Length: 557
Image (cartoon, rainbow, N blue to C red):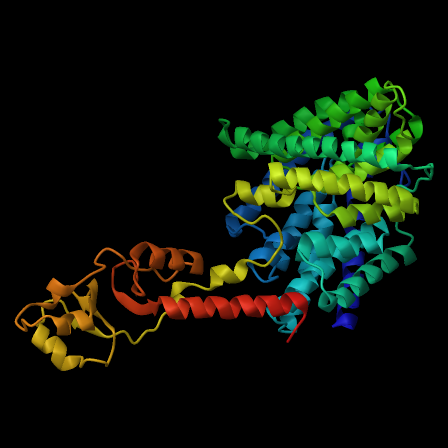
């Protein structure tokens, strides 16, 4: 398992390099930048270069339309796959997501490639796991390992990649999943390191004189980051809702969005692409607070428009960049208060981690990113402090990370990558008994007693003249009635209460509570009886699956 996970991690690293190189190649063609230059680091571009954004929107819309004609299902990302589908992902869908993200980022939209990295890394792992017929818990671990390896490769940060897998993709950390996830993350980082692939992380050196008062101030930065992170996610949701209801062809959304992004980028070129170059540029520039606020508003607007108008990508690096700006603004604002001072560069690093936690999640993930970026343990502790405050604020006031918020807007109810998919597979159709005893509702009680002696069964399903469900009859109630000439239909109950085969265990138990019955029939759409399910058996099956899930979580057998 560990060796195979390492191979998966290496494959994720190769995929990460390929996507990054392809996106940069597109930017070189359309923006005329050099091989060693970053698009968002450009301070001046020829005006005609910005036409690449609406052109990219048109290409994106055409590719998406062509794809939707042949495949109607929505691609599943690693978080959704692990939460609902036991780690099963489609490689074909994932390649399409990678293509969409490549077009979006390559033509300059303000989205990151990290979504494509994690998508393809997870898909490689899922494909490998399916070919080996891995069990559900191991599949989930592999998907986390693949996605984490891709992030480790992108940032040359194996600890960051490993905890990205634990906190964001798998949803838990156990001894059982430690070795494969760590092996994959190390392999992914090693592949890109050997290939001299330029990492996304920004290497900085900060002041190391942090005191208790500094940690308290950084906790305040975590609170501000949490508030700003929630605002970003809300703005994206509102923009998506607005564009979905806007008149006109939906395919024009990306073209209009590209035109709006071109207008912003013409004024502020640093809003182009994810923002790696802009972050390096701004950290070294020591900008005034007014310039920082202007950049933050422009980048936030560009990211919200890009995602709200349908471009594919994520907010991972955008949140890092915006967090660094927010931290610098916070430090400079405090400098106007007597006795409250923070190193702006240190505040930028802490803000980077805290805002990323507010948007993406993963306090340890982002804290380790700061550690692997700065090699400063005291600053890492400050980042963890701010990250925990931001995480707590977002969880209590909003409840979602950006990935789960997008799923919530589509109708899903998951709040993390914890495995809840088994609850949906535990349906009435899978748990029911198909040998249900039946009798015509028009039969007499005498015939009922002849066919079902006392003690042979507890409940019998009554059928109407067309053979469809009419109700349930309790055997004890029939034997308590002295009049054998009465009809079975006179003893029926639960005529309007039944289960359908697709009902989940949650819906099944709610039906038992509502009807106060210990047995219900399972019917199809035409009210034909498929089987019967008892409350006792449903409860037992739920307990068995819960125990199995617990053993998988702790790595037991």
